[in-house]
Length: 280
Ligand SMILES: NC(=O)c1ccc[n+]([C@@H]2O[C@H](COP(=O)([O-])OP(=O)(O)OC[C@H]3O[C@@H](n4cnc5c(N)ncnc54)[C@H](OP(=O)(O)O)[C@@H]3O)[C@@H](O)[C@H]2O)c1
Image 1 (cartoon, rainbow, N blue to C red):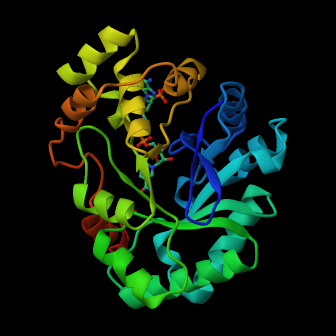
Image 2: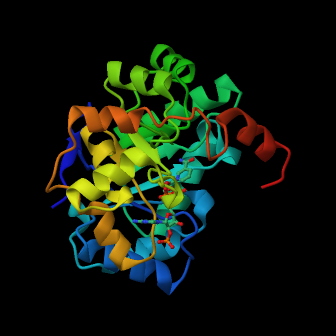
């Protein structure tokens, strides 16, 4: 069983979920959910932008595990900021997923229009109060954007999903989340498997694990939920087989020291600008 972290509203969320970006919207998505469930996963992370909600939803509905034991995340895309657009976007995601509620709904990117993301968040609060979402959160938010929500809105985000892994750790955003009881979720948690670093290789050798498993264990011991993506069932099993050993403080520190301060993914600011120019 994959252990859970408890969010500030009391909901227990699996420490590891399956990432699904680039999993195709067809029978392959159903197969991935089935294999993930067999490997012990109960959490699936998708987004409107991944264009695979339909078939992943079908996978969740048909995986054989009761709906209430599954944890489904989806995200609002950048073109749907604002109160009414956000409600509409959520309804459309729910319809595509074929579910009656979503476990976790995230604002995918904040953008620069503070008023727009505040209004989006107010819609999220409505969805939460209406019982259509169990956990509302954000993604790619810096600490100042979280502060805005906390000052202007009623409900504090329960999670912030951000790029973080040994090679890139946005320390300020992570510290702010920890200090404020906001669960950090790591996207690109195993840096696309590019983990050829001494601190990871040494620990892998010592514990008879792979660098990906050492990285997943490092996230777990940091209290960080992680959502590695793979379509291979062997890797699904590998990425959750991390609960039979512990890294020492020194090993944790060596891995933390791998931070290059360079993102592998888009920067929240630049990405949103790119999207606004219509290139996605
Ligand atoms: N909120 C956001 O803005 C945001 C942005 C990006 C991603 N995400 C979410 O985070 C998830 C994970 O991020 P990601 O997909 O970018 O990166 P990732 O999970 O760090 O890496 C996925 C890549 O690593 C490979 N892989 C998986 N397990 C492996 C292992 N044990 N050893 C070696 N290679 C392995 C996969 O290949 P195979 O599939 O071929 O096994 C895939 O190419 C996404 O799928 C998505 O759900 C969110």
